[in-house]
Image 1 (cartoon, rainbow, N blue to C red):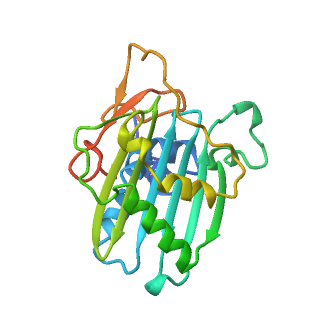
Image 2 (cartoon, rainbow, N blue to C red):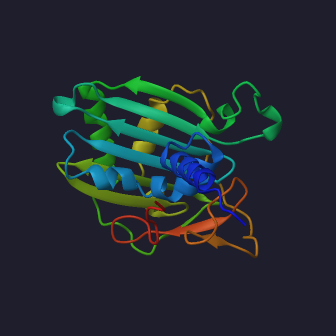
Length: 231
């Protein structure tokens, strides 16, 4: 049988493009979510970057609510922005045929931040022990509640994580700051005890996550264990 190399190449290019772009489509999210959660893009660009970058993600049961907050500053804190995206729930009955990917983009917003805003945010990070040691070995269950937080400052990358329930999670302060600057109007899913786990769990090395998948992530030395680029 003759192979259509051109067709195969185009298909691979499309798959790679979707995986490498944002989380705006189900394929790109499935292939790129672990790397996004690990802040791999921030880590790789950190050494050459000026200004500061932060990513803070609140997992409030995968498939029910995930809130992502990205902060970028310029030199002297000029032009700082907070980009917000809230994923889930995703009901396929609500797909807009004129814009079928709108469902996967979630609710988004961008907020301009003043130097005073950034000063308050940095203080909230300090009060949350963000600069403390990364909790190696901490398990982050997708069907639970946790925060991950990453930063790039002065060319240095740092990663931290907070799982519910724990004293560290209860002592968080940056969450209140982020929620106060979130104009999306999406109600915050407060952490609650979760029920029994299903028999089958998926980890970072298994099939990429779908909305109803249950998977665990493990915190490593300065990021997540077993997470790397697929392309």
